[in-house]
Length: 525
Ligand SMILES: [Zn+2]
Image (cartoon, rainbow, N blue to C red; front, side, top):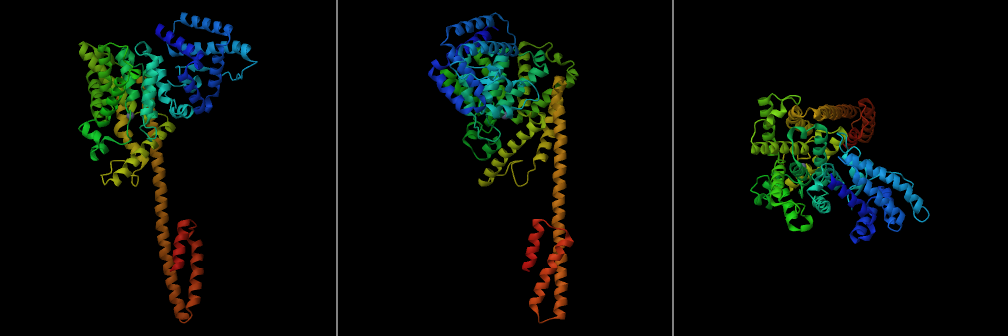
């Protein structure tokens, strides 16, 4: 944990010296212009920037840092509490020192410092480890910084800074975030952040590592994989790339095209420039281990692995009679070191894949947000397929795809059976299955309502058709009658019919636009 304290100390010093570094000034201006909601963060930085002009405050600040070093910090919550306490104490002192000549905000909001350049108010991420966390709410406050925010949080939480230099990691994750195509409706940096946060939330709530015992290298590899697992995703599926003879499909021989691409591009970035080389402080062996795990994890996000992972669960559940978390430790009994590594990789694959398909396990409003986004990306692909005369992929035809129906199919066929297995290993994750079942019920209600509505519309059409028929008969009978009565006066015949049609409007009780239109058509007859 000493490393973590060192890192924290550097963060605080960086904040003090914020304006002494050109790069920092640039970033400071950028934060200022982008994040209107973060004015209190900025005012806090302003306060601290002023410290260097006042020796007493600076000394006091150094003393606070020393006190921090003496604490035994075991997790992020301790760090947060200390920073908050530290901020509150210092705020008063600073106020006394600077209240005359600086515009200090009276806002006492607590600030969490996570990095030298990216600063997040702590209240936005208070529930980041909770199943109820709403990633869209975070994104709305720190636009396009969600992936760095969550990633940096996780690096603190698990102490990965003892493996990877924090400044290099910040540059790396910022570059990765920019590599995601933000304009993709679904496969963008927010989805990557969601998968990363979900995986962490599973670990924090599911007691997972007590069972699978991943060491820091494995954990770090898993979370890095989550962060980069859709890096540079073009917003089209593997199927589309194959059917359209895309260069990527040719390069990767139609095999896990995108997944190969995401991980290969990430390592190209790491090797291409020392400033992004997050592994530069590791030895060759450590680096190769993390690289190998990351390749496996990202390739496991291809849906073709779903059946393999589902079977992995089934086989172990049956073999060891696993239920409600009982007997799960037996999976690792009497295994060689290599077998343990392989088994751990299976669980890592399972966790990244389950996080990747976790949308239906979230609260309904969050889930619906994702469902709409994925459908709009699919429809965009369907349009492209039509334009290119390619077969339109499943769920991609906007003309005849129904969102609730498609999602119910996804829940019943993929997500629910999979998670039913997962909770046998990790029963504390039961809330995922409960959310999923609840979401399915709500979707079925939605579907019923849609079908009811459609039925009503069909009936209306039918009734309009019947009315048309009736009206036609009336006109016809009338006209025949008029014809008999006054064969020569054709003009009065037309006027009378016009009145009759309007009267019939009331009889049929159709006052909607459609029926009016039909009546208008009748008028023209
Ligand atoms: Zn994904």
